[in-house]
Length: 550
Image (cartoon, rainbow, N blue to C red; front, top):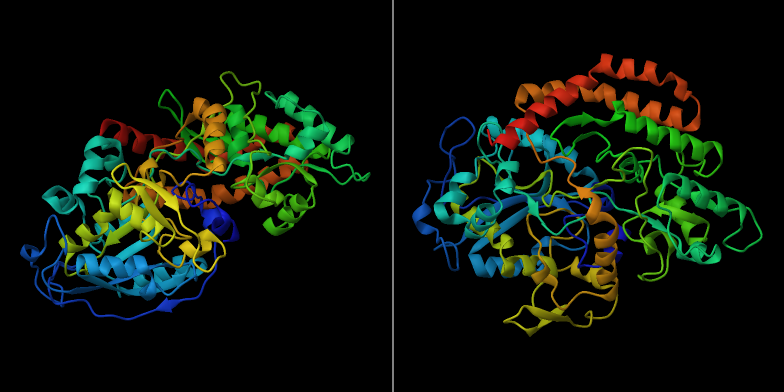
């Protein structure tokens, strides 16, 4: 969580991955009753017990949304920074819309378990917010009637901001439409996003000490650089304590490094010709393992990779021992302030033609961030409420907090803003967490350059330049957001349960030399026996359906 709080509020958005979003907090469960001003069918087709539908009382434009006060329940994740009932953003939304929420919150680390219990018990909230709804959950609970279809309310005028986005970007709509033709959850949308996983960074002090003026461009050049780190004491302390490359179980660097061998993702990806691949059985994956084993044998890959914690890795960075590492920003690991002194790694070319490649963010969340349940008595009003976050004013409110707290307009007509001093001093990002629920979790809404116009730092601009120079030219989204059918999802989940375990174990064995790479063919035979080809086949079918719009 510390990483997220220290990050620039301009860059922390859709591109945050699950590992970066990990945080702690305390539950804040509040029970509340739904208003009797509307009603919807429950999962069995019966009328909801808390009222009859009254869409006539819901405005399709303007505020307040409802003619008389409406109270709904919301389930979400809690970063543990502030009481949601006291958050200025949510209080302002209540005044603006006429809709009050009571909150059923769980700490981020335990939210998934609580969400599963809620689905199993049938004791549903009216809405799920920032709920990380997996595609399988959307398909399963949507087909069961637990989550209601949303496209009807979007198309009937209760979500003009979303409708505009979908009309301009039809791939977003079809990427959140399940095989039965319905949309049961809404994404986070950021079409400017680049990072699917956090990138790799070089320690700028080491580069300077070794007089490196041009970053490695091939795997051989990368190997030679790491060898120099090991042998030439770039931290200048007279001790052989440098760690050329470090990792935590390879999870932080795997996807970035696989790109050196033409692979866009660590599990399933589609190439430029439209063919779906299951990564662990690709020849490029063998190239990755071979290189990592070479680094391990020559003590260039941290031998604590499979045992250390993120905190232990960070301690090495702050002790100026690490040359190459993964993190959201380099100063998260190395310490100090945000600067352009520690360059982003340039993905390097291997023996594979047309390498390197980079698995770039698809611009939308892969999981659902918002859903309306069958318990909800007023889905039209709820859709209007959430649609506000997909427009400029609502997205600005939820991302930056109310005007005149942390920021103010320099020119409202052009959307140019400027920062204000943090009330009482302290960390700006942590204070933002007291204002808005959009902190520490991936939430519904959209991001655009207009939201941060005038608020960007020199570091933000430097990150953009690094992305433009090093990642965007070779970037492609690994796979669109697609849905398997219920039967396909059941089969894939069963197969991947065993495959994931086997692949993870064999990766560690191949890299550390416990399993010689001469046994690659034996490994491939086992992967195929366990269903590797079938995984590619299932996702090929899902991709083809998505690609043809069927």
